[in-house]
Image (cartoon, rainbow, N blue to C red; front, side, top):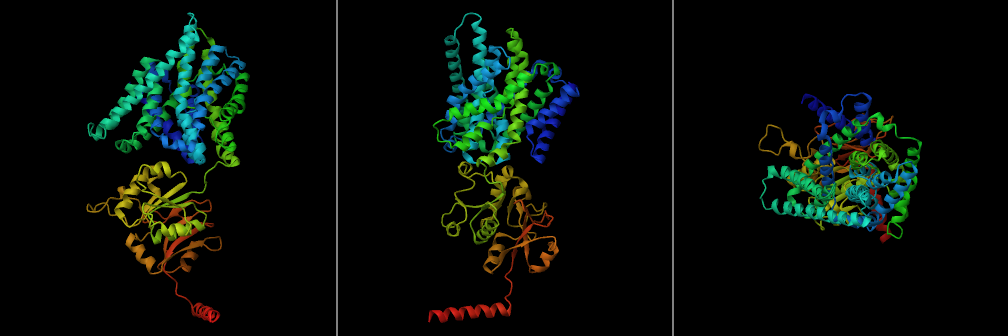
Length: 615
């Protein structure tokens, strides 16, 4: 008991620690987790998952994978398919069989017997949302290739599992004289039944939750229990059919417009992070050097063939005649990282193949880790370069999202736009957006809190959100809604935060950070703007530092933000004071400076000259 508790704690520390290091460094998280698990397991012998959990290890990992696939399905809205076009369907209908065929030949060339090669090639068609999603966030890829990769990752995971099951069942039953036609049709029926079970479970949730039949505090437990129950029930129909059920259940719920599910999105994302971390650490720690000794030079050639021949040939042939541009096809042909599902299913079938008498089955665990490392390292460390070379990279400069079209926000947006910072103004009023359109500034017409905005407005480029409508309570609601997605430290609003002991005011935990050290409110900036206050920008250098800038600007000047040379924004607020340095640009809100007598005389002369020309 104490040993298991110690292992669980160590797995958590290693998994979350690896994710934190990945966040700080930008390295692929899965590679760090694999390294951490391998060092803790076979290298340093800190713990042995199989010894700690025994026969419970397999079911634990299977249920974890099921929950991860369900969470991934919940993030797939069918409206996103308009970005992907016909690419997703082609990669599913043609890419899976092509990848399976090419992979089987490659593995057989690498020395595996046909049954093991065919089975493992079926598993290899997976990519995996747990590794694709972080890569897309890291690279900021354009919407269409990003949508194709995301959908392919979610759809191919259960498909790869079913391919492996079909291969295993065929080789198991063929020993008794069964034919291909006696094995495949029952598999298709089982997959259809599993999908129907997942859809039925989603319909039950969509019926119960909005009608108040499940109390709020029980919604997450009920949902998780339902996912596990559906997974187990579908597996009783056919091995690994549960992966199909939970994926269909997640996608169905995502498209049933169940408002009650929106509040649990942060929780299910936290669960996914914990599961991904734990499973990768456990699986890599379960490796032993005996399994790795099977890897030889032919396996290395296969990995090169997988990267440079099998995946590119699969994608390029599957997308022939599609609407996907060639540069995006080449990008898709290179990016295909494998993750949890590949390793988990490989470990399961390695034992089953050994029971059938195929000695090569022992190589699957080590080979699966080799594929994961090779594909993640190749994709993770080159995705930015490849996306940039092929012209499919989105904006790399951090952007500013402004909620509310007012004279103050429009002036701020114009200032940031002149500094080449991506900026978008969001407002639900077409009339308030009129001056925005007239000045040619980017805008989005719609309610920022509407769920449809998530599918029509890509939030990936935006590093900071500023809510500055005329309603401070609404601004706080917007900041609180987007704090989880953008970051609590990156959502701002006008108005000073209340004291913690003031029970009559809105607590700081429910609002964004306050803009300006002075705590200017909505009415304050509106009045100052009418009085002629303007935004000014001041560039710092080695010869002109922050103190020099303060002396040059008017005494009443209010510092708003620092813009670093790389586009990073750092705001001045009551809680944070960024450290200015050479190369930074200061954006400040300043009163109008009185004109000198020379400027007044020049203006009058210009007016007289204009009247003379008119006469």
